Length: 243
Image 1 (cartoon, rainbow, N blue to C red):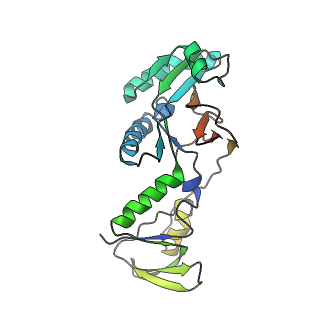
Image 2 (cartoon, rainbow, N blue to C red):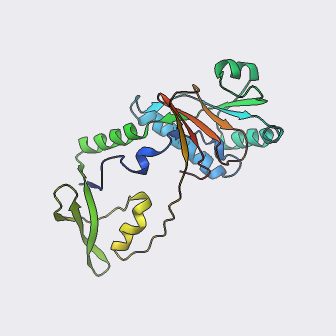
Image 3 (cartoon, one colour):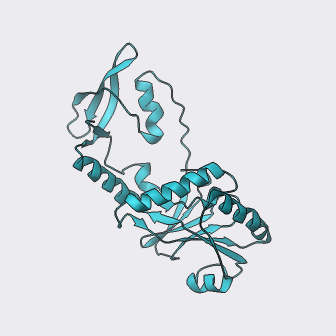
């Protein structure tokens, strides 16, 4: 296929480049959403296999029980991991604290899972370069501002060049709307209604790397559960939904 990518800004300039970088093992969802857990586990293996080495950091992840409630969740958590076929290891608490000195000293149980960290910009750039090598035309600063319709069919997309300000037309047999949070707005230009509800995630970035591994709370997914070592910084995510 002959492919053209119209990017409103720069590759990875929006939400995609600002995600918190956790490449889930699937463990987070084994109890609340087993189907998503299996998808995460499969995706984790695929990305680790096909991405260039600088894109994925195979940190591993700890799920830690701090409170009595966390500890009571452990049994359900382990049976979920087994059902989803996710590799895990029960880690001795003293070993975990030696490995991760910044863990809460009150930690009562630790399970290790194959969480990894993926560097968003590097991943997107690698994908873009691979596509370019295969013949994809990538235009940055190209905003879709409308479509020309013939009955129910889109004939052209109207593209505003955000540098020069002029509008060009792009003709294609198939148009893929991959605009993320703006997908509803783009679909609307073609007279199609797509409901998108953007929601805010809140993340705190610490200026140093606090842990070697991803640290998760051993409990049903809720807010402030995940600490991700992202290069030289650490990102604490609220992130109660799915990617």
